[in-house]
Length: 324
Image (cartoon, rainbow, N blue to C red; front, top):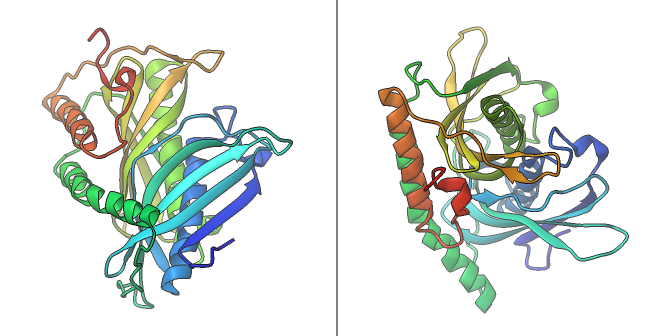
């Protein structure tokens, strides 16, 4: 459903049993896939051209979404650059039999309109006209500098075999079922892979069931094509009293060459849960190698940068070291 102004799209559907993942409810990766689809619909409707995911901002996962819940994903364009569209997306769900609606998560998604040659093309400019639209536009503008600082900090880091922390690498081929409407693997599928790799890494480290509570700075560098070899590397870089900060890199390339290029990067925070679903303390990770120390400091730097943006603070028990 689109609004009369043409800058907003809302998807409504029932969460299916097939949406339930390892957590017993709908996994964070599936929620991110929904976010990407709704934001894509808003972007394409506004630009009247094919669009690609460029960035997904910080998103907190709060109450779980369960099979059978009525889900509503609303995406609204709040700011446009020359070829980019900043789209505020909110995910709500409720029992279809009745009861209150809960806001599970919200984030800013940036799409870029591209032409047939894959290069960015101009989009119509969005002009806010109500106090609420102006506030959302200003909120988007305030986050641009913080986002650039996050991207620069991420780009400055090196990940090699010198690291000693828990590390997981998943490898597979991108299949036709992963394709989006433009013939590429859509961002939502990539984010689902990120969540899966982070889950394996965090669960292996703490020996417990884990679930994502935060995903930040999902940066898309280049398209991922059907038939490409995909490598998803997840590495522990920091632990709070309960939160495990997992850096995830997605690389892909033509299997005929064997060369893999970075396509996506993000940082995910996972927590361990007991039988009741309550977050529990996890063992503190102590950096050993020089690379460990640098990545540990990098994770702290990202937390400090994100703290400068409105509404981005993570709970202390996810960030502060055990005993601090």
